[in-house]
Length: 154
Ligand code: ZN
Image (cartoon, rainbow, N blue to C red; front, side, top):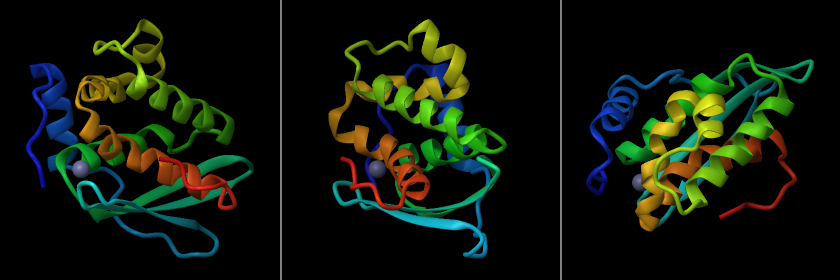
């Protein structure tokens, strides 16, 4: 467990809210749900994502695991963002989130704010390279659950 990076106050509040009150904690029976496990050895973060997909829509999502504030907040925000969304929308969100985390700019772009909403509060983490994997873990694990055959991404 490492310390919270110095995000701006508003963003830190959003992150801490999700960390203290994580959304969609629990498990789903597999099958019919899909399950994927993610691990960030740099920090010790672990996450399991359960997805119930019907008609190309994510009907339900649950998370279990443990880790630092960034990894836990990011997974909670991810779960809230993808529930009820189409697979295509969710694939777009994954790309946008990863773009935000690898961009040079610390403040989220207008596009990121519009489509990612409160998830954009993690944009400041991109300043802290060792924490980027904490933030992207949930999203990479989500991608694994969507496409079980795809190779693990860093
Ligand atoms: Zn972490």
